[in-house]
Image (cartoon, rainbow, N blue to C red):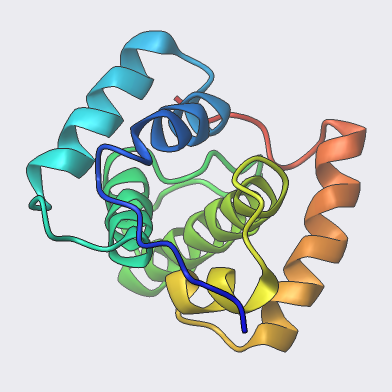
Length: 141
């Protein structure tokens, strides 16, 4: 039987900062993102919920740059599509980082991202290729 260790928000502060730095590429942006995340949780918040909040704060603050040749013409449906693309790119990148930096299992990442395990596996497969090539999943801040 495996013993599950419940980490407190303080226990994963370093992991959150590392994730923030890898996602933003900036010390200042990382500090801001960590602060924003921790303002939205309390001392009893579990690791999964902290990481969910981190994801929400990241997407709300930074999104993910996408190199698309699409001009913003004010079209609401086009804005929605661009927002979804940015969120998906951020989710793929965060999935890879949660796996590689934080050492989380596919099921844990699935809980954080709110997606099926098979989707996470697909994201990890493609995300690792993109990260290795230095394309698409560039830091956005």
